[in-house]
Image (tube, rainbow, N blue to C red; front, side, top):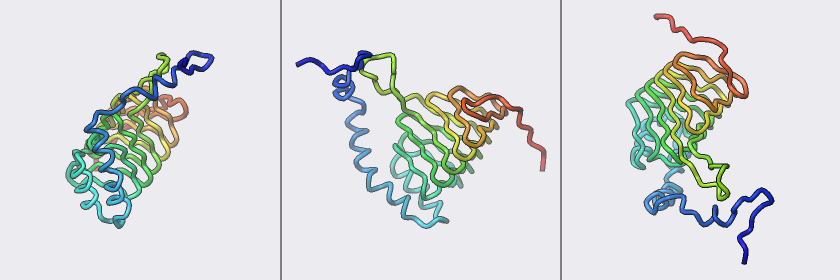
Length: 190
């Protein structure tokens, strides 16, 4: 029997038969299925509880970091969250690869950090897990998307509904789809 391929040569069987996760990752994903409900069902102000649950599943979570109960984390053991960082409501952290959110960084509601993709140049579309890094004091605004392998520099802002598929320089402000430079962020002293 021939391997099914699309007219453009895609190898569907090869993709489906490829080993995408280690046995440990598979076991952890199975354990995380019920574990994620410990986040979802916790009352809104129980940030300490959610920090504890994420740490229990291997996340590195800083002091006084806030993760909302509607946040979705795919693989907590691939998450590093800095001190005083905040992850808002309905954020999707699709962290097949490492996702690092720096000290005092903010990821606003419904933002999507995506550390997983496929190599479209290969017929079997192998899974790739490039890291996503959000630097200290950076702000990922509401509904923004940060793509695989992207680093958002210290103090940078990815504007509302922006699509960042390339690195964002420190203190740079980007917006739009694709994200374009619109200015520099300047913080005033309190």
